[in-house]
Image (tube, rainbow, N blue to C red; front, side):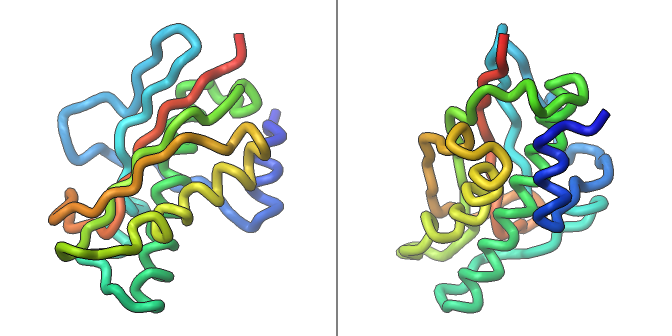
Amino acid sequence: MTSQVEKRLAGLGLELPPDWTPRGQFLPFRKDGVLVYLSGQICEWAGEVTHTGPVADTPEGIAAAKEAAKICALNLIYRLREACEGDLDRVDVILRLGGFVNCHSGFPSSPAVINGATEVFIALFGDDGWHARTAVGVSGLPGNASVEVDAIVRLKD
């Protein structure tokens, strides 16, 4: 059975990535009751980093990084589906996203970049996709990825 969330995903022309091996020694998520803590996901697809940094402070660079953040969101949703035992309709609300942008000192557009991830969550979960958020610039990420995003999600009882 396909969840309503996955139907919306397909309706947006999006798909979840194939499974991949994490780059470090950590769990992809940790559950505590109805809370799911999702480990940071970079802009990786089928084991390859899709966008590398640092992000250029140009309209084109920001647009590309926003796409990278979208890929991070899809990776998070893939792991969230695992945490929900295959049923994304069990998601109650997206509580928080943490966004990290590989950039040079003084880069002013981290929030605009992380909007790429935020927009995916709102498109899939509606009002329950709105979340608290951090968007910060950093000097490097795993695989020299442009963007990394993590999340905290509450499931329905």
